[in-house]
Length: 214
Ligand code: AP5
Ligand code: MG
Image (cartoon, rainbow, N blue to C red; front, side, top):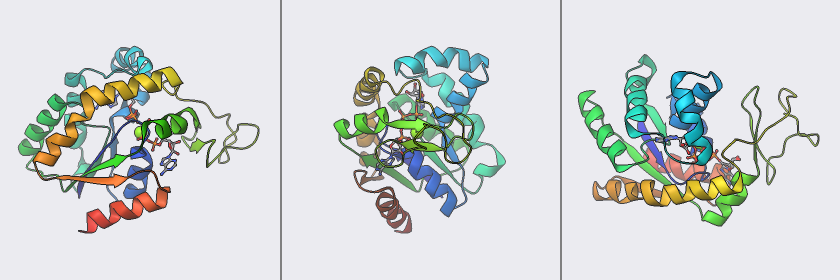
């Protein structure tokens, strides 16, 4: 099963990818998570990406396509994968088409998760993460301990560097200009399915599972 999750920052791509990954054991490929790991490890890629990500802009297409090209050829992708946050521009989508052809693979589903921008801003300004075990919290509906520590490992939770309101607004502008056109790109291929992301996590997941079943 090869799945692509589209949608603006904060619609729940990562949350749903993790649930899909549990139900159907296929890896989540989040370009954002790969880049954040590179920033943390201060690799060459991480040094280039850090400044761009902190502004909420997009990392250059050739770097991202190179990353995905390598990742898709790893052994665990043979049984399928979930693309989360890639592609994000038309050139990335075109490069993915070429890459999938080379690897003799086809996507089974392109799922766009849709949420209003004001709700996204509320979600992202309230997101907290555990820097140690990676647990995801949200002050709105899934808070950490009252002293802001992780319920799983006790570490103090933090905010993602790009989850400041100004940066979130820029990420949404970048999405509007560069990523939203992908909806038409995949709709024209007859591949796009849209799910309302403004419902509980399990309800969104139920809709996704139904699409995958069909
Ligand atoms: P990336 O990491 O991909 O971030 P993003 O697209 O901005 O999206 P998020 O991860 O913030 O949100 P999400 O949709 O995964 O939602 P989540 O499940 O976390 O990219 C970061 C940066 O890396 C980019 O800005 C760019 O610089 C660079 N980058 C990455 N990929 C790139 C590419 N292909 N090309 C170029 N540059 C690239 O949920 C958000 C919050 O909402 C959480 O707190 C969650 O608990 C909560 N939540 C989730 N679902 C629900 C629900 N149903 N109801 C209520 N709350 C919910
Ligand atoms: Mg994410």
